[in-house]
Image (cartoon, rainbow, N blue to C red):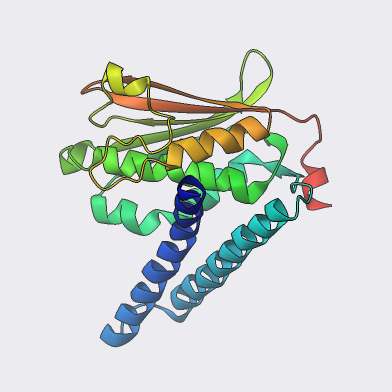
Length: 231
């Protein structure tokens, strides 16, 4: 029960934190009389989007309790990466982190629960931001890549040049309640691994202490072309 409660709290915390950040940003701009109308509207749209996302998490929890079938739809992993990057934009700018996107030129389609997979991507991005906090401002770099592996799997790769993870910690990285952060609950990567495994995929970590960390998500790729998403 403790593990389940912590997992739910972790999942809900991300959209709720995004709502708070966007709302505070709007309030500050209005108070100072800065920012264009379109900018404020976009921020409010993000608030609405994240509120819906929190609702989807609750809906999924209800479905799990009542044993409903999980949501699966065809989605482009490129689009999920871009959405996740938009959600961390405020924190990225505050930390002066450079993000490089090396996204596949063709859609990277997989049959997934988009809310769950975006949750995994967000968790990896937030972990990377934390890891980069100790680097000098001008040397904080984050690389996100998508594509297809030699085995035909769709992949998302998140690479940072942060402090890295010690070899002894790397072995326990996906264990519940294990965290290398002082304020971490130790559930993010455990939940992420469970989500990816339920999609018949896998998540891997590779790191060198002082050099940075690479996380790779692999999911079964779909042969469905991009038009299938629009329909």
